[in-house]
Length: 490
Image (cartoon, rainbow, N blue to C red; front, side, top):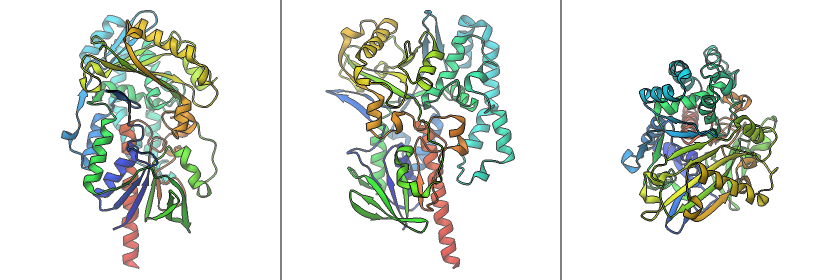
């Protein structure tokens, strides 16, 4: 039985371990932390808990099908469908509520933006064609060999998906009102991308919200970490916690062992699941020189324990700033603290009583901010207080009186946790870091070293990272099969 050593137990590492073990590999996970799950973790305080990282579940069918394949039964977790999806609150006092139901959405548009109903219908009709096209061309294939990307069908797909335009620019062909342009372009921020620069193919995210729905994992997204750890142990995957991989011993074009906590662990195959730009130094000698990586945006994250639940609030809400383009410019261009940013708020206690004591709740707020070290976050108390004021004024009346505890995470904390340049979503999804231009599942010339995670093709977002892990596992298994064929014939 061939041995696989996986370094890192984020969702990509755990998914890969389950798939490889199910296919007959002897799998070991080494994790530098004391717990599995990576960014699928909780912020805890007393009897309160709330997701620390991802919250919105997109592409539920992809997530479920991969978990099915990995041996995780649907009875082990529960997805709750959001309806409405979420509400956007604009500075002029207007709102826009998104729905899965096309009929409800049209009613909302006719009431709020009657001039844009036909544009919405054209958008959905065009994306009905574009989504399966993009999924087949770019989500279901890896591009270890560049020739696999530059095919006639892929080039036609890129043109059809208008990859030469930005998300925002492409949406101008459908929507006239600036508020709707924001409502259908901000989704690139889910993966840390600038809607004014990210390729138009990422407009498929906002389409997917309507077409496939937005879900919530009961107990929080982080509850999946425990579900997957249970599955790993059930299948017999070896788990080494507090164990960091710091180097490889290489012979020819193959790694023969890895150094973990100062000791050598031999294996036939190795997988890196840390944020790839931050761990790529382990492969520096075996990778071609390339332009510096560009990190995704980062986040200021605020977590609260409350003495109440805001029952009239949506689970997900967006409080838009007065000038979205200025906010994006500050995040991606000038790398400054935004003056009047948009804020995402997550209040799962509306539908999940397991996160706090009875009658109490949790709240999470996310503000897109620049990655890197350009802002001194130790001196931004006034900015943080301003964000709390905005939340209280625009969506959560009496918030300050309701706060029992609060915690803050900044880009500096993200950097300490091993995220490249403090970017919260891996590499930025720019044109030159998408598809074939993104690090692939075999990122170096070493024949038995693989990679998974948000910075590896096809990219960020939990289901997409899981899909990347599936692509990686498939390629590893194919390589193992070819090796057996060569050895047998020899």
